[in-house]
Length: 269
Ligand SMILES: NC(=O)c1ccc[n+]([C@@H]2O[C@H](COP(=O)([O-])OP(=O)(O)OC[C@H]3O[C@@H](n4cnc5c(N)ncnc54)[C@H](O)[C@@H]3O)[C@@H](O)[C@H]2O)c1
Image (cartoon, rainbow, N blue to C red; front, side, top):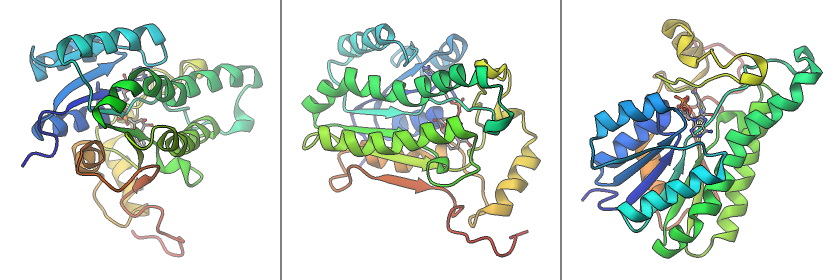
């Protein structure tokens, strides 16, 4: 039996990296996926890959009007929604707080929190009633940065910690009909995670880091030695989005290859 047979699953930030891998997995598990992303070029590319039957929408999750248009398109095409998976995010460039020009901090905070936190909150608000009606699920994306230092700078880390609390609160508010959970990945292969405009770092992507350097850094820290692909995360997200999850709500799965299970007395390699 397919895990998500006939479920309508919206993946926000599904244009590349993690969200795209999840979308591919959900479709393979029988879901009718809807992919929403801010990037017009990614949307055009994905429409080719997923075909005309799949709704692929340009949507900035920080804008209410975009989310409302996305909701209308979903209702017109499918008439329902069974799961919302939030995968969008931006990085903060990993700049230490004291090296950041104070006058840039204001806009950096707004930029990172708008995408990483407000986007999830607005999406939950706009699609919440559809998910209540379908006894559906919400799955949001954190990072190991929500649990331990040095997974990003102060803005990214704080934004991921905020999502962890948002999962707790939404699970409470949306109960008993909607299950709300989070996933906290560590490193992800093929990620195009972008830096912030406010620091002039929006031209930088995680995929710019040489693959070998990123892999060896990750291997030196994690117990399981493979850098997971976006598709590797699919089963965790797919399960939490599916009706098979009858037990978990208000929790976050730390999907970190054993990264945090270390007291770091010796290096692995
Ligand atoms: N890359 C990693 O190593 C890593 C580790 C832990 C957690 N994460 C988290 O995983 C998630 C996915 O990141 P990724 O690494 O796949 O990066 P990615 O850049 O490949 O994917 C993120 C997607 O979100 C989209 N997006 C950005 N702003 C948006 C907006 N306002 N509205 C709609 N879409 C928007 C981007 O266009 C992109 O397609 C993020 O939340 C990130 O913080 C990534």
